[in-house]
Length: 216
Length: 222
Image (cartoon, rainbow over all chains, first blue to last red; front, side, top):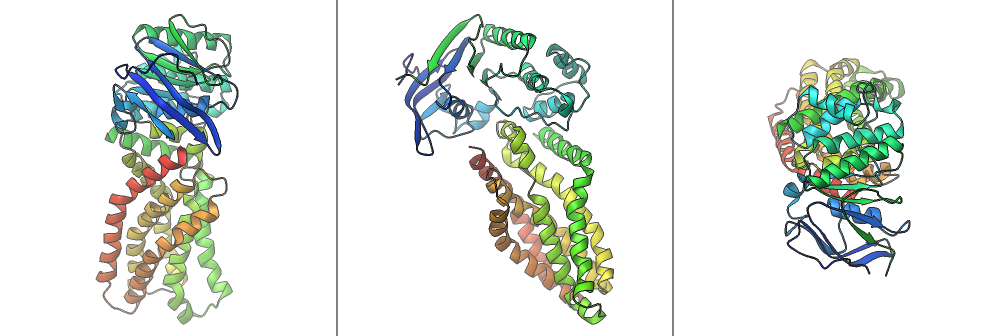
């Protein structure tokens, strides 16, 4: 099984001996890695190799069958509140309500993350993600790529240190891919961390670590 | 903390308002069951008066169960539930906001409709007052208890039957105390005992059910 670098418990994010079983399938076991400020981790692997399961465990949504995920040395499942205020998760399902407009969607995300905001910020962020003019349309009338941009807008306003993104490039057009790349680069420069899965090569400048779940 | 509570409640009310048609369904269901009784059983006033508390309460119970099924469904499907689970806010508070919003759009209208149905079934005035009181305490109780079952079954494809099996036994104490209170009121007897019992159940559910709902959601989503 892959272990690109030994687990440094003192790294902000450390994964220790992680094992994941879904049904009767062992997806991965003995997984060890750590992530430091300014690093991006790309998780590779064939379909069904457990990429999404790993991300959900990292996000604290699912439990692993063995092992732990440590955030600043503490088990994330025991310190949920502290961990969740540092993490933004962008999954397969975007969490964008199709009956609400992008503005309303963003406002509820901000309220859930306990961030104070004004109208101006919300509109500015949506413009930045390329949704100018669509702010007050119901999200159901937006395309898949535009909905994804609404979800991306969430990352722009939440001060999370760790971004967990499941296939952030699907459904996006060329400018959308560029936008995600830009967001990631400035996030890493600020000392942020990101874990993502992607079938495409990620052309993000910065410190990139790769983990392949299909190997070994 | 209360900013998130308010925002989530406002969001759910707004979503409900944008689906006004669906809102009417449980209410219509409630109304239909009760109005079918005089037609199906007997239009005789003495008989109707006798069965009225039970009929209205059973209809309310089924309508509550029916309306609850979609409490977390759409949030589960579009990923909003995941985002809620990943919020640094206490999850039990957030689910309480959702249940409260749900009660406002499903339980409260039933409360408003009930006196009319009471008149329809020839209930005496003190019994209608007791019916209102028991529904005012009982319907939030039904929402809170039901939400635990809904949270447990939201990840299942066909959770409907399982939900009924899980929740019905827990609804029975509410049904017994509530109908007993209304029947007693119709006979001119004091009902304080039953009301206190229902009220204590509500307090218990208000404090414990959100914790159970939150835990059940974490299991369903993982």
